[in-house]
Image (cartoon, rainbow, N blue to C red):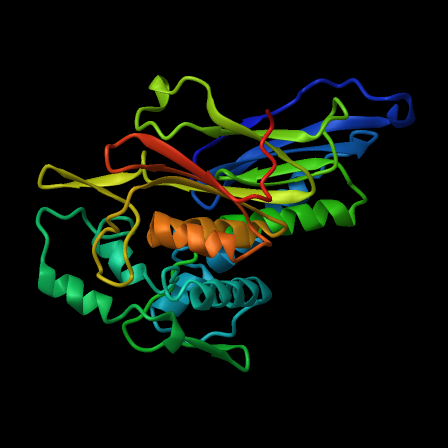
Length: 328
């Protein structure tokens, strides 16, 4: 889960050249979470109904929370033709899988289900034999799309939860742009895309939460970042975990061992034109650990990255790429 507090501007004032433009706000539920959208629309035209219909279509394709969805039926072994939503997310997931050398792997469903982040009962004890059996079912390179059909080896399953929300943000943003809307902020489950300016005619500002387990104890933001015509996704371990036999485990599962990733990463924020890719890369970094994440981020100039991690003494440290604009 991603934890971002968004700095929304709700004032209706506008410059004289935009006297007919009105701020519209939409909220709702999708993909097991909530969405918040605001945009400047001529005459205050409201697109909530169309947005809800669009999100329902995506849900029907990609949501593992829906038994009737395309991905759920494919995971059960049904032979079905994939749709455009599934195909676009699949190839993006494949791209990040290859670039991250398998640290980001959407075939992780058998493991995430086992560890209680899916639809199976919570564990009372860990069975190492079962972990190994399920780890053998995790390998995205074995899954292909051929002639609009998914080739999914027996026992393997897909889970696009680490990329689907970001993709949904991109799709909604594209819809708004098709309606001539230039100034908007789309947020779904903490993933977001901003374009143009807010109702105060200023660049959107996004507050990144401090990595504190108890949200009520968090005082202020860790950092506030400007977001202009781009997307932002944050992934963190500090509030989503499982407790098994009295031990807390973070929700990041290593695709190399089958167990929870052991590293000092607390939070990763990625800015990229595509929210889908921001979402995927943020997840990949959490699994990589701080050393590999720094190397990867510095070698991919298209990414703007901000990382919060703990050093060997347990103190918070931060890393950011040189291309990330940090206000003074």
